[in-house]
Length: 347
Image 1: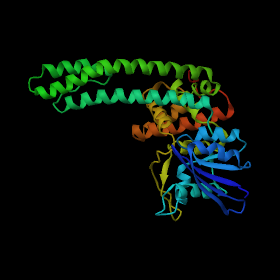
Image 2: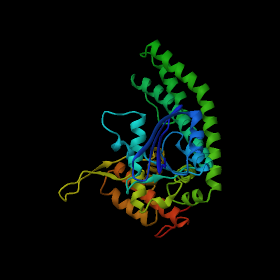
Image 3: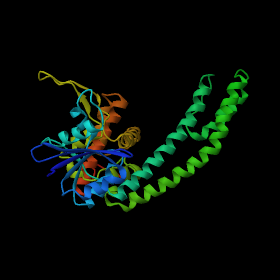
Image 4: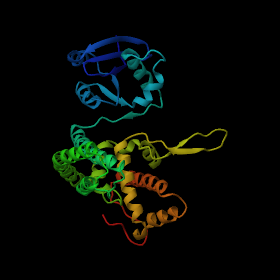
């Protein structure tokens, strides 16, 4: 039995093997327990192992590469069309992985290093704490809004919100009890959340200052150390993107197409790819839109001209798209950002 390619469907405890030879003939179908996986691949001659780029795939990619195999990670969206309709199971998934990887136009995801995954763990933890803090604050604001009470944005405005709720005699005691309880919990819990967020951000900023790629990215207007660190840790090999548009499309910052008969129809942005990078780029673009009048460069002039013709939210996404393209150029050339125009952007 000579295996040319093995499709590996990973899970927590059960792994499905689908092996084919050079002609594409199925040679092996087997279900393995987690403890038996390494022993199985130790007995196999070096071959190509393909997995979906999700879960612990990067860990197994490093493990199997150490055994002499050539490991490729493929996006789950590229595998889905090859799963037989009505036969969704582990064996069908493993066979679909082999089928998708054998296509001449198949694109693969580079495996991340342990260091990259460590930085991404910091970003994931920070994002979770920020989300929990925002949820608590929004819950208080939402309940108070039902009784006509609002305050300006900001976590520090919650004390003012509680004072207004206590002073309002129309609000029933049950609602006051709910809002007060959330405020007390928010005071205790949000302090811990804020400390955790600050700790994670300090580590992320340290990575952004120590990583050459992140330092280059941070010179782009609208991209701070957190965004720069996330992009540098996520994009393992920038050369996989042949054009700047491919990078923007990977981040979901290009419009959907529904074209036919030579007629081009563009819709809303696709919002595919890495959601966290896209969100941070849009937030950075939003901050630059508010400072468009003082942005003395070619991009600033372009931004002001588009703002005269298009809604602010559409311009924000368009600027995020442009920032992504600039980021690819900076990473490809391994240089800092240099603005074209009257005044260079400050790093």
